[in-house]
Length: 183
Image (cartoon, rainbow, N blue to C red):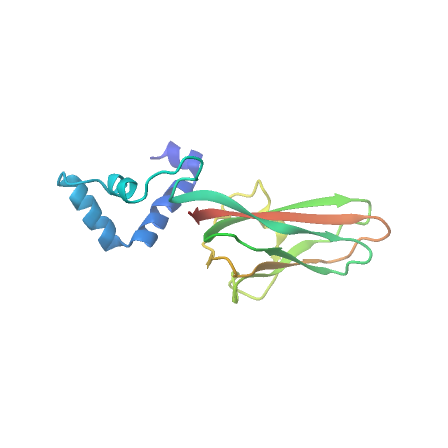
C-alpha cells in the first residue's frame, strides 16, 4: 500500500483486525471459502438475515469518537481533576486526543495524566504520569490498543497540573477517544 498507508495511517488496518476479532479466524476462513466456491458471499448472507431498515445505521464496525467531560483548573479547583466518559455502545479506543486551552498569565502549569482507567485496568504501563501534550491533536505515533468498553463500564482520566492558576486565570482540558464502535 505504501502511500495509502501514509494517508490512512493504522485506521484501515484496525478495521480488518476488528472484523477478525469479532468473527474469529475459523468463521471468517469458512465464510471466505464458501464465497470462493460460488455458494454465497458473507455480505449477501448477512443482508438476507438482517435486512436494511430505512433510517437505521448500517450494521458493522466503524470509526467513532467518544467524548470526555472537560475539566477546568482555576484558583479554587485544586491540582487534580477527573475526566469521565460513559459509552452508549461497544467501543475499542485507539487514540486519545487532549486539547489544552490556557487563559491568563498564571496558567503555565504542566498538565499531565496521572491515571487512565477503563473499568478496573490502568491503560498505562507504569504508575508515573504521562504528559498531556503527548496526546495533542497534532501528535504523531500515538496509536494505542486500549481495552474494549461496553455500556456500564467507567472510563476516566485523572488530570493533574503542576501549579494551579491564580485569580481569574484558567486551564481548560478537553478530550476524546477515537476508535472502533460496533453496531
